[in-house]
Length: 341
Image (cartoon, rainbow, N blue to C red; front, side, top):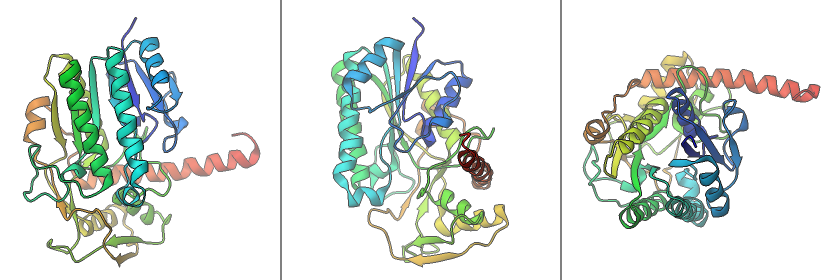
């Protein structure tokens, strides 16, 4: 039987880009997604989409056996920091409990490689910038804690059962597929660049800045923004690394450069040519002041070579996708009213 890669959350933002990278590399891909934030229409033709929960061990075990799955790339989960503060139990259930069940299914069915989508939120507010993989993990939100717990489960399972893994700690993901095949499509998304390009296209009345009194040069938070396609390619590099006998490892996935909220908004205004409205409001709980990746380890370990390490390029791709998404939404709405959707 031909071996397959299971991508959980493969109908979502980052997962859909991962599916494209795998297909471009000639891999056989299976998607498991509950479609709570993903979309059927982003799934490429011919790729099996199984609608279900990563915590459903009967379903997951059947898929592993049926499709000969030897590697799991796990994206499915909840990721909005303020939401995790308001509803922590939902985050622990979806991110930690379900991940534990998925890992257990992988081990019991003989999966060889596991790649986990983690986050820089596990570091909390680091005392040293850029933050390296061996920095203390002191998350300040249930989102970060839920991901750190999942990391520990995977690390323990790897030691006990010989499951090889790569944990990738993402920094701020943005942009869209350079070929225009996928992008951030979630309604009411909270990611800054997504929100800003929506404002530039008139789909939001304004952009809110949550706090301008931080101890940074312009008073706003600083983040390391990584293009979603570079991130997906890091996962593909991680898969190749494990297949070649690489040891289990935890790696940061960012560019190693930070931009403030105001710098990002200025870039979106410049690239779009639109001076949209910006308002100031109070800080949000769980937001670190500044977090930028140390990237030497991932570059050395995976020989990862980012192709889109430029904020203007990230914004331009996000803007192009947002324009296309607006045209597609209008078409679907018209077809629906005509009864042809």
